[in-house]
Image 1 (cartoon, helix red, strand yellow):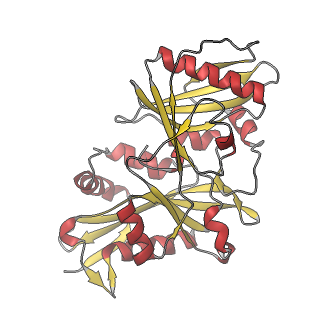
Image 2 (cartoon, helix red, strand yellow; image 1 turned 90 degrees about the horizontal axis):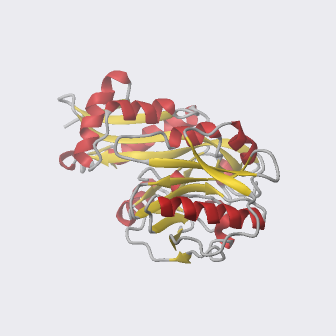
Length: 325
C-alpha cells in the first residue's frame, strides 16, 4: 500500500479534520483548523499522509513563532502539533521509515525552506521516547508542576498599587511589557499581543480569560495572566508577573480575588525552571506537585546554531507552549 505526502491546502482541511477527530477526543472544526495554521502570526505548516484511496491517514503539523534567545539571535522556531497516524496505517514503512518518520522528514524540509531554526513540542512519555528513538529529538529539561489553593485573601495589601481587569484582546501595552522581559539569554517564544491573541482565541471546547494588570505607579501594563477553564479547577495557561515585589504581591492578591469570585478553588500550572517567576511562586503560596499525566518537552535542531549540547536546557516554557491547553 502506497502513501502520498503533501502540504494540507484548503480543500484538504475537511478530510484532515475528520481524520484528526478519529485520532483524538477533541472534535475540532475546519474553521478552528484554519485559524490555528492560517492565523498564526508567523505562519505554519500542516502536512498529511494520504492513502491510495484518497483518505487522510496521518498528519504532522507545526506553527511558526519568533523566539528570543536562540543562540546569539532572535529567530523563528516551530512548535510541533497535531501529530497522529491512524492505527491501520501506522506500521507502513517506506525507505526504511515509518509513516510518521516520513511526515517528520517533510516537516523538516518545509521548516528549513521557511527559515526555521528548530522544532519543539510536547508529548506523552511513550510518544516522547519514540520521538527520541525514531526521529532524533532531544529532551528539554523537565517542567515543574505547581498548584495554588484559591483562597479569599484575609489581609488587604497596605496600598492598592494597580488594577486587574479582564480584556477581550491584548494590545500594544503587552508589547511594551514584552520588551522588558528580564532574561534575554533564555530561548523563549516571544509573548507579543499578536501571539497571545492568536494562541488564546476563543474555541468551542476551550475557554480562556485574558487578564491584564495595570500599575498605578507607571503607565501601561505591569503583568498579565491567562486562565484556562472554568469551575473549581482552573489552569494558569500563561503569565507575566510584575518585576517589582510590591506590584507582584498586589497582582497575586487581585488574581486570587478574581478567581474566588469566579468560583475557582484550585489553580494549577506547569513551567520550566527558567521562567523568571519560578523563584517567587512559593512566596505567593504555591506548592510543587507531581504530574498526573506528564507531558514531556523535546526539540530537534535544524541549524548548527544548536550545536551546543546545553541548548536543549535553555528553553523557557509555559502551558502556552503546549497545544493541549
